[in-house]
Image 1 (tube, rainbow, N blue to C red):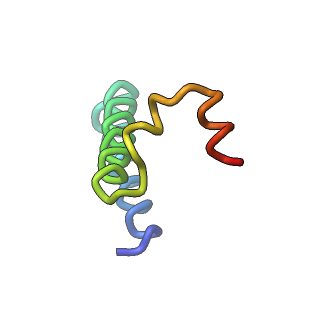
Image 2 (cartoon, rainbow, N blue to C red):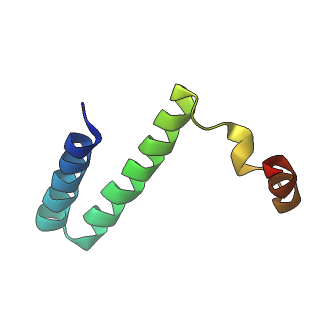
Length: 64
């Protein structure tokens, strides 16, 4: 599935949540979607858990 289709589905889910559930439901769907995205990237291997817990100095040293 292309990223455009995934984006369209996510947008439609947010639109339905906002329309039928109000702004609170919109925020809940958006937050859970972000969590799902991060978990999916972790499972695919694109992100490592250590990326979230390194200090700022460690990140600078790693880029050089």
